[in-house]
Amino acid sequence: MTPSPAPPPHPRPAAGTAETVRVTAGRRTVYLVVLVVLPLLLLAVAVPAAWGWGVGPRDVVIAVVMYLVSVFGIAVGYHRLLTHRSFRCRRPLRVALMLAGGMAVEGPVTLWAAEHRRHHKYADRDGDPHSPWRYGDGGLALLRGMAHAHVGWFYTARRRSSRGHWVPDLLADPDVRRFDAAYPAVVALSFALPAAVGGLWSMSWAGAWSALFWGGLVRYAVVHHVTWSVNSVSHTFGERPFRTRDRSSNVWWVAMLTLGEGWHNWHHVEPTCARHGVLRGQLDPSARLIRWFEQARWAYGVHWPDPDRLTARRDDRDDRDAPGV
Ligand SMILES: [Zn+2]
Ligand SMILES: [Zn+2]
Image (cartoon, rainbow, N blue to C red; front, side, top):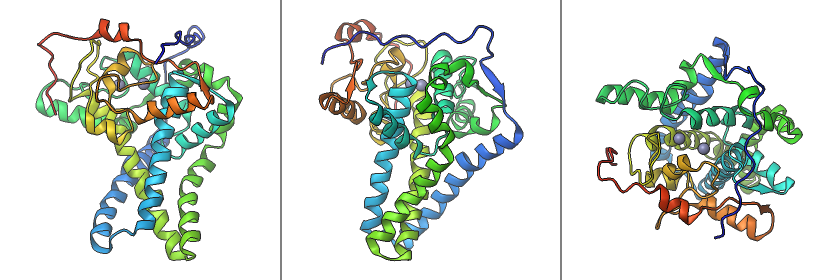
């Protein structure tokens, strides 16, 4: 892999723009329901449903495909392409990746990217929207912090990242603006698509309903908790082979579920790098997908890891304080 020159820096925000904006209680309640309560309820229903009636192969196929589309959409589209600009790509692929990310029902991309860029700037310090170390290092304080980093912050944060401050480049992009405006329709598609495939596949309403449940609702709940695990687990447990100012870490099972995103330590060293799993044996399916896009000439200017940088940032001390998994 050949390292490419670093991508251009994010445009500077307008001087004096506030980093955060107040969110109304109504909006926080919407976040609470859509991002916390509903997914937990669906998972609570899914377990006895799978146990009692089982889940057929048709629904498993639909749910797995929808899972891959959503998680790749978040990892490759929302995160590596649009938030960090670790590569550039042709317009149809960019729009397709944005749509795939929208299928995860984690908000319009400008909102997602704004919170995430703030996370990188303040990682595990004051100003980080979701650090598990917020309440301290002790047992209960850390447990409370992990709950906060996982889902709690969606409701408790009274101020959210200002899009005008953090993502002026995305707001200036007409495709992104169109996508944000169409976001409610994308969410509807995220559930209508599996239902339609299930209905047509089985030629029955029952097939449509069960595909809506497994491929739409349960899949979105699982995708959410898998994504949020990067914020909670991959800032708490695991290995930290590289020197960073934060507690970002590598957790293999989070990496596998998130298709590469759980290799979080190097990502905090070099957020614009298209590969997160940079060490031997660290499977990173999202980086592999970007490589395939590059080979097909759909993606270009990919920022691959620089071996000299990897060596320079290795942490060879013995006193790393990772609690282990
Ligand atoms: Zn992080
Ligand atoms: Zn990131």
